[in-house]
Length: 627
Image 1 (cartoon, one colour):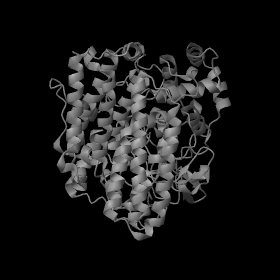
Image 2 (tube, helix red, strand yellow; image 1 turned 180 degrees about the vertical axis):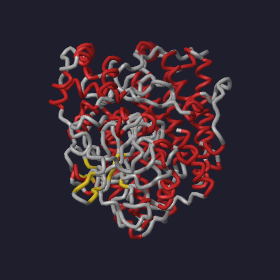
Image 3 (spheres, helix red, strand yellow; image 1 turned 30 degrees about the vertical axis):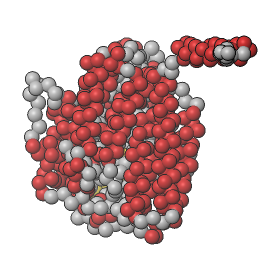
Image 4 (cartoon, one colour; image 1 turned 180 degrees about the horizontal axis):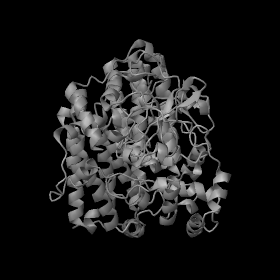
């Protein structure tokens, strides 16, 4: 008898069919959801990756904290520090853009800061810790390092919390990327934020690598494959130059060819990033900033706005106001004795200085008192150049006023300088038909104290000079048809200025003044320890900005001036103590006032010797004269 085959029970068969059907529906639903679900925008992808990078930064800072707290060998602590700094550089371009205050807490200079409320805030962050663990990590720094790294960890968490609510846009991302390239040029490769360990070059490479990684979210190759390839090649070449083995030591830092890097790599990168933004139809900001949001590089013509630092848009310069201000600048009608003009102390043929150590006072001729001769009187400080004064956020060497209008009125009223009166000058000008016509043409309100000050300020804002041979050489480095050359000494001098000489950590490229890049919103003051006389025997008694704020970090502090046209502006320093550039460089080479032997605990200029040799000093002078 043959047995019948066993068949599945009808109910079991049905269950299997229903299971397979249900599984198919689930798979289809998942596919459909994935197909229909909105894709993350590039800006959202950048944000997600940025948040992940913050977590990586937190991990490396935590590891650094453990290395310090557990008293690991100095080499292990320094290695952990370096990993944490490289991780920080991966988040810097967005962190600095969206959270500048937290970023400053993480990586600001190791100097106390006096805020707007005149509170003195102690420094914190990576630069503080760097000086505690480099060049050697001594036992007496253990407690300080433990405290510093704990605050750093808290600030990383603060950055994470703030960043969670920030909504990134494509325009902001591209703006932040180009500003980071400018930050690398002006601060990264100069050693500004790694002044002791000199890890600047590898850290700059880390920053650029982060930009390249985030740029990939925009899939530029879909829009312009050629441009995408150019950008990837530009990133690769810039990073390769920064990471070259010869640059991994302090000597390598000194030898780095910054001129070539900026002209042939960094400028190419910032330009291509702007091209990519335009190719992707991402709008470029139109807002008013000192540095134009549409700047391709830092040496292009017209990228800095001389009308930016005004109180209101109504005070911006016009051709009529500039012409009127120029007339006023050379008219003794503003002085009390009718014999002095603004040009008395700011002479065009001397780059708008006067060639005096300190300017002659309004009573400037030899007087006789009985049978005795009274020497000519002087004001207390050297007359600075007015060229590029528009690119400073504050005015006067002690930074006591913000706007050029207030500088004009301060000088006119000063009994030692112009000894004039604004109301008297106004009445005198109202008697003159030429002034009545010029003011009416420039201002609806005619002749007033406000319009007089604004006209003078408008003229000063027009005194812009940012096109030296140095600028032309960098701008045209990739255009062989433009025959602009620098000598070997000028090239070496630029690289020394931007590197070993540490000049560019205070006189920032390309303005070569103290207005801090890449935001260019504040102008720094420095404590140098300038001597009273050229023999360097005693500190100059002028306490500078301290008179204004009465805060110890500002004792002997003076605004960092522009170095452009410096060959024409001798003598130098706030008191005109040095007659030549060679003397100035010798002062810096020794370490400023500290190097001269002065006890100056708040000196912001590093007190270490620069150890420049004779040829290097000559090259620095050659470069400065090329400005």
